[in-house]
Image (cartoon, rainbow, N blue to C red; front, side, top):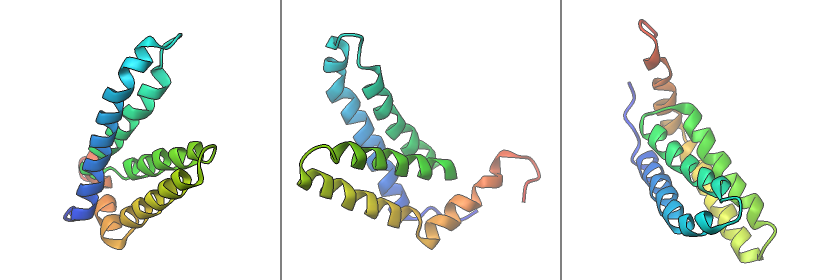
Length: 119
């Protein structure tokens, strides 16, 4: 088993915190919205899921985290350029951190944990 890089822990906890804070922040508006705002809240839950499972070394979770951030880049493209630029820089930083060799070893080292006798 490979040791979890500190950078992966930081990104994971940031996803958990961002998802939880955004969920709480958007909840009153989602509850008041006609038809509810379940979609917005589901997106925030995905950030929490990505963070938790990255801490557990699940490779799919880093893909989910990158997709989540990519979604934010895409929706910010409809708005102001500074917001788009900020999201793009954050996306690039997360991708760089999660695909560095040490992170790759950590996530690959956890793939076989689910099955008995897996290499």
